[in-house]
Image (cartoon, rainbow, N blue to C red; front, side):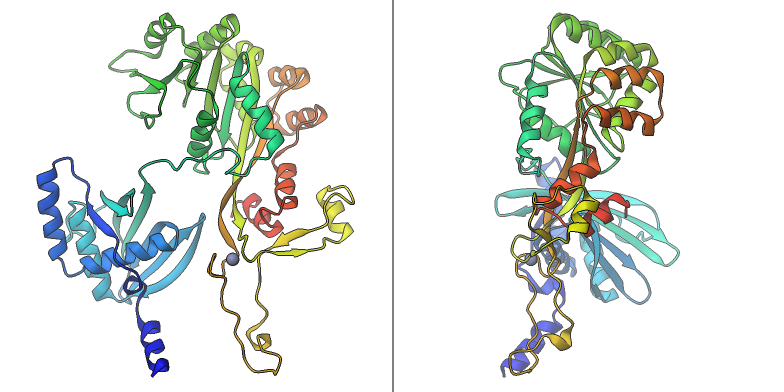
Length: 449
Ligand SMILES: [Zn+2]
C-alpha cells in the first residue's frame, strides 16, 4: 500500500508538488487587474502556471527557461547563477500553462512566433515579486524565459555578501572618509547593481547629502536619503546644466551610476578636491586595475583630476557558497597550499562539496543497498546561495602615476602588486581558506563558464 502511494508521488510533475503560488496581473488600474485575473483563472492551465512558479521559487530559481518543441516542453531553472534541467512537461500541460501566463501578462496567447514581453505579480507570504515573461518563436518551436525578481532589494550587508572584516573596515573608511573618489566595478551582468546598492547601504546617508546624477532614460531604483537628478541630452537639462543647478545645493556626495560626459566628470572631480567632498562612480570592468585604467583612459581630459582624488576601486566576482549543512573538510596537502600561496600552518582545513560514493558503494554494514538521501538544505547540489569575492584597490603614488603613462593592464597590475595590492585571485583563495567556497567553484568562476 505504502509502496503504491510512493509510486504515485514520484509520478507527479513538479507543478503538482507544491501549493500554487499567488499570481496576478501587474496593471496600474485595479478594476482592469481584477477582470484580467478572472480571465486568466478561467484558463485551464492556470493551476499549472501557479504550481510551476511555486516549484521554481521553492527551488530558489531566479529564471526558468521553457523550450517548446514537438516532443514536449524542456525546462531549465537558473539557481545560484547556474542552469539545471528540471523534469519536462508534456505539450498539453505546457501549452495550457503558457496560455494562462500570457493572458496574465496581457499578451496574445495565440501568437507563438513574434517576440513578446510582459510582467505579472507573485506573492509569497508577505514578500512580493515581479515575474517577467519573454517569448520568441524559434525554428524548433518557441522559447520562453521567465524571470522572477523580488520587489524589495533584500537588505544585505557587505558581511552578508562575504566581504572579510578587515576589508569592510577599509571600504567603509573610504566611503565615509574625508574626501575622494570611490569606484564600484564588476564584470557586465555579474552583480554590479547589487554591489552598488550595498555600497550605498554601507555609506552614511543620514549625516550627509547624497545627490545622484542619472540619465532620464535609465533611472535608478529609489533609495532612501538619496536625491535623484535627471539629465536628458536631447530634451534637456544637459549634464552640465544639471550640474550647475546641483552645485548650488552643495551636495556632500555625488553619485554617478554612469558617467554623463568628460566635462561633468572633470567638474565634479574638481569640486570634490576643492571642498572635501565625495564622488562614487559605478562602472563595468573585469577587475579593479582595469576599472582605474578605463576611467583614466576614456576620460583623458579629466585624467589629472581623477587621479588627484581616486581613493579606492572595488571589484567583485560572484561564486556559489558551499552548503553549510553538507560541506566536507579535508586536510590540504602541503603542495596544494604552496600552489595557492597559503603559508604553511595558516590553514588546516579546506572544504569541498559533499560527493556521495558510487551507488553500489552506498550500503549498510551488512552490505545491503542503503542509498544516501540528498542533503535537505541544498538538495544534493553541494552549494546554497552565493557570495561575493571582493578586491579593494587603494592606489598608491606609483600606480596613480603609471595610470597616466600606460594602459597596459599587465604592467599596471604589476605596479599595483608592488604597492601591496591583493588581486581578485588572491582574495578568492582567502575565501576558500575561510571555508566559504571550493576550489572547483573558483575554477569555474575564473574560467568564465
Ligand atoms: Zn547541502
